[in-house]
Length: 497
Image (tube, rainbow, N blue to C red; front, side):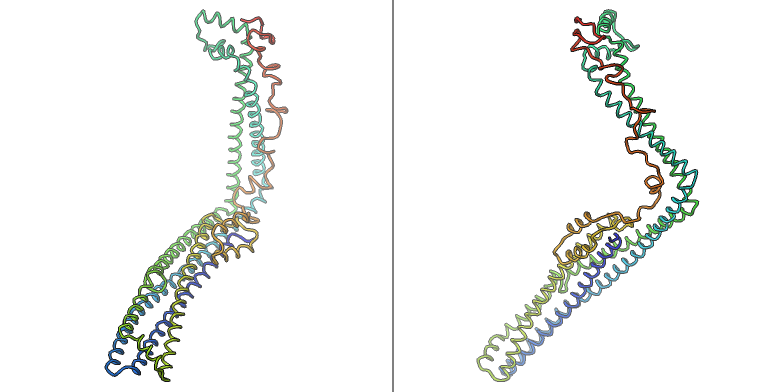
C-alpha cells in the first residue's frame, strides 16, 4: 500500500522528468538548427566553388556577390530564430527551476503538516488511554450511552405507534358517519350545531357508539404524537450529553498541551496553503512560457516556421536568379575531377539538409505532444490534491500499477480517465489514520455500544413495545359491520338508521 503523499510524489517526479525531457528537446532543437545553418552555408560555398570553375570572371563575380548577399539575409533570419529560441529556452529553464523549487518547498511544508498532525494524534491517543480510567469521563460516557439507548428505544416506539395508527385508523376514517361527527367536534366544546342538527347527531352517535369509538380514535391519534415528542426530546438530550462529553474531552486535551498542538497544525496547514499558492503561481508562469514557445518565433511553434521559411525562400530565389541548376547540370555533363568532387558534395549536402529539416519537424512534433501529455498529468496532479488524496488518511493498494499508469499517460497510451479509475478502485484509509478529536470518544473502543439505530427492544419504559392488541382500545378496531345499519359489534345496534 502506498500513501497518498507518496503517490503524489510519484506523479510530481514524472512531471519533472517530462520537463527535463522537454529541456533536452530544446537543446536538440538548438543543435539541429545550428547544423542546418552550417549545412546551408557549406552549400553556398560549394556553389561558389562551382561558379569559379565554370563561369568567366564577370559572371563569376556577379554570382558570388549575389550568393554573398543571399547568405547574409539567410544568416540574419536564422540568427533571429535561434536567438528567439535561446531566449525562451533560458526563461523556460528559469521557470522550470522556480517550479521545482516551489514544489520542493511545498513538500517540506506538507512534511511539516504531517508531522504536526502525527504529534497531535499521538497526544489524542495518550488522552484516550488516560480517559479510560478518568471517572469524570467515564461518567459522561455512561450518560451518553444511556441517552443513546433511550433515544433509540423512543424512536422505535414512536415508529411502531405511527405504524399502528396508520393501519388501525383506516376503518374509522373509512366510515363517513363517524368522520362526520368527528370533524364536527361532536361531544367536545368545539361542537357548534343547531338544535335540530344536535338532535339528529345524537341519534347517529347513539346508533354507531360514537362516544366510545371517539375515545379510541382520539387515543389512536394522540399517543403517536406524544411518543414522537418524547423521542425528539430524547435526541436533544443525547446531543446535550455528547456535547458535554466533547467539552470535557476538549478540556482534558487542552490541559495536556493539546491547544499548542492544534495551533501547530493550523500553522502548518497555513504554511502548506501558502506553498500551494507559490506552486500555482510558478506553474502559471511556466504555462505562459510554454504558450509563448508554441506561438512565438523560434523553431517550436506554428509561428516559428516563418523565419526559416523566409530564409529558404530567399536562398531559393537567389539561387534561381543565378541559374545554378544549369550550372550544376553543366558540371554533370562535362565532368572534371574538381567538378565531380563539388557535385558529389552538393548531393551529400542536399541529403543532409533534408535529413536535418525532417529531424527538426520530428522534434517539434514530439515536443508538442510531450508538452500536451505533461499538461494532462499536471491536471491529474492538481485534481488529486484538490480531492485531498495527499492527506495523511488516504492510501492506495496495488501501488505497482501506479507507475505503469503514470507512464502510460506520459507515453500517450492512457488518459486521466484511466488514472481516476485506478484511484477509485484502489483508494483505502491509511492504517492508523483518523486520530483527531472525537475519533476515540464517539466511535472507538472506549465508547459502549448503544445497540444500533433502532435501540434495544422493550416497550416504552419496559418490554414488549407499544401494542394495543388486535385493535386500538379493544378487539378488532372500530367496525360498523359492513356499514351503518348492518350487523356488527356491540357498538352497532343493527337494523339501519
